[in-house]
Length: 108
Image (cartoon, rainbow, N blue to C red; front, side):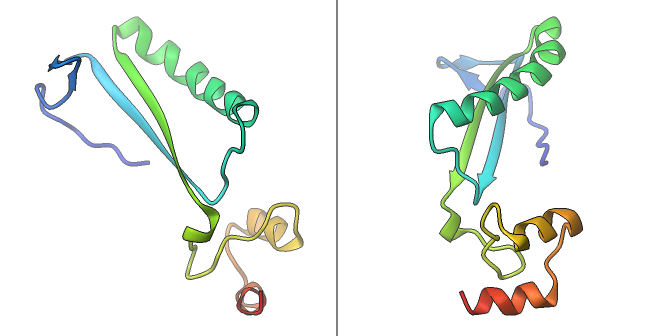
């Protein structure tokens, strides 16, 4: 996560300063949502977390998901593993690639 502190007049909405306004930008690399049906549960989870934090404080928010095509993503110079593969399972468990994974990825 990245947090950027802005000055009071740095955010604008509808051509006017938006003092109680924030944006939530989610960069979703290598794992694209292929349809509204896939994306909606994710967005609902974001809304369920954000709404009770911001709404009582009068903060207006906008959330956006920016997706990167899988072929444009690299993790430690490797393309991320495909889902439902042994390599992906290892990566999730270890939160890292092994030397064997690096070698295997070179031959894909």
